[in-house]
Amino acid sequence: MHSSLRLLQGPARRVTNRRRGFHTSRPVGSLLDINAFTIVSQAQRQWPQVFYGRYVVQQGEVVGVWSRSGRYTRVQGPKSIFGWGSSVVKLQYATADPSQFLRVVKWDGTKEHIPGPAFLIFDPMEHKEVLVVESMRINAHEAIVTYRENEQKSVTRFIVKGPKAYIPHHNEWIHQFVWHGADPANSDRKIPNALTFIKLRLIADQMYISVPQVRTRDDATLSIQLMVFYNLDDIHKMLDSSHDPIGDFLNAVSSDVIDFVGALTFEEFKQKLDKLNEIKTFPTLLNRAKKIGYTMEKVVFRGYRSSPQLEQMHNSAIETRTQLTLEQESMHQNQSLLDYQLQKEASRASAQQSLERQKEVHITKMQAIRHEEELRKKAAEAEAELEFTRRKNQEHLEQEERKSKLRIQYLQDLAGLGVKSSELAQLLVAEAHKPDKLVKVDSTNSPRLHIHE
Image (cartoon, rainbow, N blue to C red; front, top):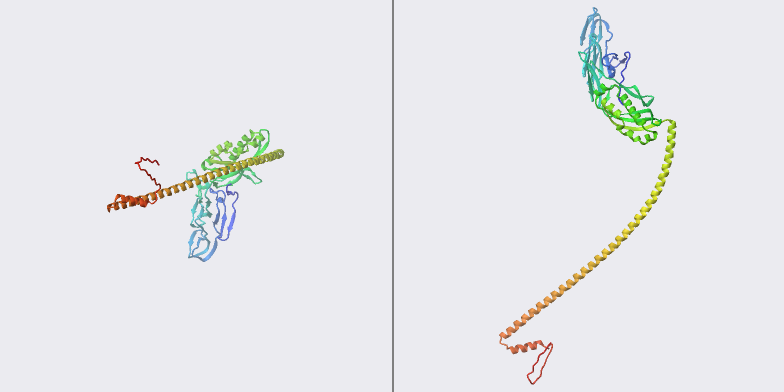
């Protein structure tokens, strides 16, 4: 769950870096545990050589010279020096790039950290050791806890969060966390002091927890397996309230599981397994997590284990119950199939009747539409014929009226020319040709005649 760097203990270890000609030494007992960092190289005092006469110091070199009387002089090249029985040693140098720092330990006991880029010549009269050390890479969502001692010997705690390349102060040390961790022989089991690290994760994390030997109300022994999802919210509260949060979680989960399972029989437990997926089932865990600066996001039930005898009985019961369930489901499916067939037949008959009714309604509507269309056509034809007759009669009347007007004008013109009325009467009689009816009365006396048509 946590990336960890172990802090080594024991005597110093010496590693030779042949490319630089330095020796790497990892001392024990200093305020800052330098083993938490990567040491690139170390500059230390070299064995001097004795020379007689002239000694040439090349450009770029720095040497330390001890005269026969023991006086020490540092000489920087290019330069020629003369001596008789003097001792000379090439002084080593240390270079740190921007991602490194120099750890300088002096003979007076003082220490100094010089952030890179930096360059320092190892002076054996002043420096006990000079280390080139890689800065600690702290990724995003990670943090380390450091403690710094001031001149008044009081200590202040600091939280260093990433992303950052961390270079410690010379009077600073890093908090090492030692928590419960997974047992190498059994990953489901957590043992004390198995997890050692210095970097805390600040993002959501998860952990497998197994609670063994939990008894139900009817004395069935179970092993409950869970997965806990949590998030670290307050580092200061965690440091002040707990030295092992994982151990606290284990104890709190065990308490909640024992309370939950102990109140139920084995059959009741199987019926309420879903409750172990609810966070409210774990009040002790929630309270303890809140007190030490954590938030519990979710708890997932991964299953349970029981004794071989109970497992066998449970498997037999499951097999019998499964067989009965399958038979019941088979009968239910058969009945459901019959019901489905009957339902479909009734639905099909109803749909067919509805379709026939729709056809009849459609036929009736079509007949009504055709009848209305025929009536409309006949009415239109009768109206057209009536209009034709009306127009024809109107034209005939107009024509007769024009003829009558012309005839009257003609007779008026004749009368204007001096034609007598008797002559006009004869003309009219002559133009009339054969009359429709002729009534002739011959009588010697003056008859009295009255004719009714």
